[in-house]
Length: 245
Image 1: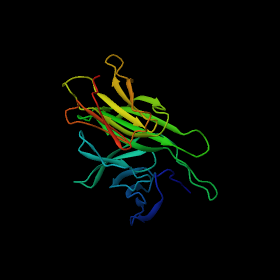
Image 2 (image 1 turned 90 degrees about the vertical axis):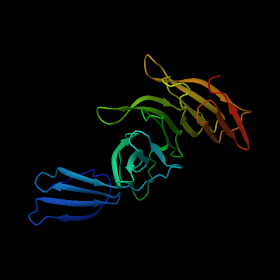
Image 3 (image 1 turned 60 degrees about the vertical axis):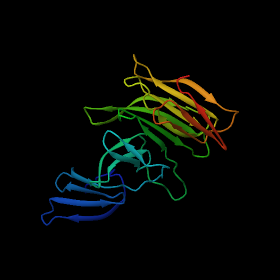
Image 4 (image 1 turned 135 degrees about the vertical axis):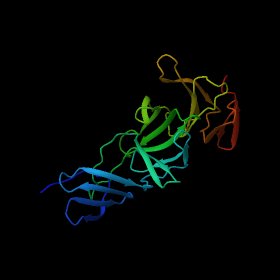
């Protein structure tokens, strides 16, 4: 008896070739795998748009790959090409082990709540969150850089607890002057918005400045098209800021 564990999702159908040399399995996440009947190695994977376990608030466009980026499995982002109905790759943001849920215990996974890209797609920012309603909530901000060798994103900087309360927005600033180091903003229910910049020597991201308005919680943020003005919404109040100052 042989087993092939960790296929990623529950199996819905199984089919075998007439000579038993190949096995095809389909899964609940819209993935079909062709498996060798001899050594149980996965020979080919066909994957379309995967069902998400957590629905993000926005569809995000990756300017580098021309793909739509959205959630699929807990903590994983899928890069999906609508034109070809094909997922080109996955990014495991949180790198957590998946275990089956028992009848009397609910599992709480870390989920990706926000994702943003720089204008060129060289940088990606993600915000992940976990709340099991027992221990302290966990929030992480991660900056990723595109690796031309692997043709995927690799993590560059990890920031634990970027805000004291939930993060409501993350966005890259459009470059005011071409060639300048990239900057990004995050905003939280703690009433603060933070500007982040990449260091030229270490290429790591650090917090550059913090802004707030009357201790009100942030609701949303957006840059002007040229990046010279930042709009931050505080409940019923809209504030305008100059990011450079």
